[in-house]
Amino acid sequence: MSTVFDVPQATVPIHGSGDTFPARRIYCVGRNYAAHAREMGFDPDRDPPFFFCKPADALLYCPPGETADMPYPSRTENLHHEIELVVAIGGTGRDVAVADANALVFGYAVGLDMTRRDLQVAMRDKGRPWEAGKAFDWSAPIGPIHRVEDTGIVESGEIEVSVNGEVRQKSDLTHLIWSIPEVIANLSTLFELKPGDIIYTGTPEGVGAVQRGDVMTGRAAGVGEIRVRMV
Image (cartoon, rainbow, N blue to C red):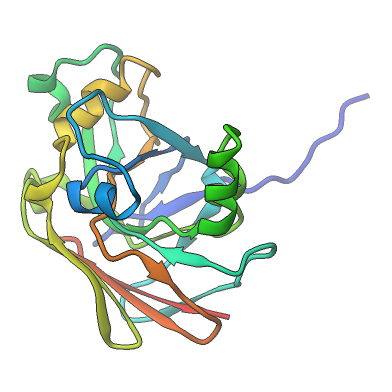
């Protein structure tokens, strides 16, 4: 006797169309801006990047022109915003060369890697996995995906987030330690990338706490804006 469960597929709308992008896996790059690495107590370097994951259903879609509500998560007193450019993968690849990596890009979005910093640091200091600090419900707000055919290859441009109108993080995508093609190439040596994969590419300096009632407004060059209210 079989049991059928009605489990919804996590998806992200594609800008300018009625189509959606089915989310397969979410990969996140750790400490990919030098100034952020320093503020977290680490020296930036060009060692191979490291990655962690969030479940696909951690996505919280933020429609353009609207404010999405994010429930303040449990077991934390230090919830941090981390603004990021997000890359949506539309091809399959393993051991991809840096020169070929952009061919796998379907599009881009702006997102937030929300972090229970107190839990993350506690787990890190004990040598334990970060999931409790990173992979919780609704921890990956995201705007619509903009096709690469519309944006071109995104290599530069401002990225920022403000909280209640005050700019907290502001940088340029040129400050990434590992470029997007380098991130894709390195990731493909660890996992076979497939359509539906989503990569959060790292956050600049200025991460900080948010409280219930705060509204975050995040932007990335060429891919619009998201607004998220903590409730």
